[in-house]
Image (cartoon, rainbow, N blue to C red; front, top):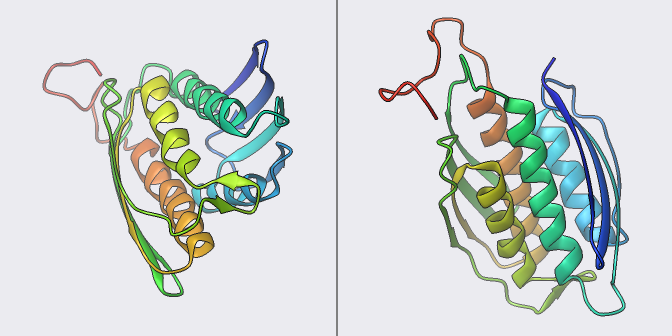
Length: 193
């Protein structure tokens, strides 16, 4: 079973993550940011990851440090759980609607961690979460997981758009980390990812 635990403590945040990537979609997430708990639970459910998160941060300042460090920590957890990446499908793509919104994500578990984001939000906040922190979370995840991620989303309702992104991310990542017994070693002409 592919799994990982990450404990990250800084002067600004304290984060504990337990992850099983070959799970059933169970989650128990407490970040102090209700909307972020919601979208991370959606990500776990649709990616079929078992995910437990306990996170505290200097929310009296704002949500930046906590969300950034969640992206860093979750990226580190996925990188650790994937280990040597043998027999991993590597690529994933998902297009997920939520009412009037739609999110499209493509990714490559390539070890490089490039990130591109093409989505705009109409308001400054979604619940207590700064809208611009959605992009920053994925950028932090991408860099620390070593996964190239391209995100596009469109729609009118910011909640729907952000939730569609997290659902698409779960579905897409589940596809990419899947094991294919036809693959010999690493799925790369270089022989390494």
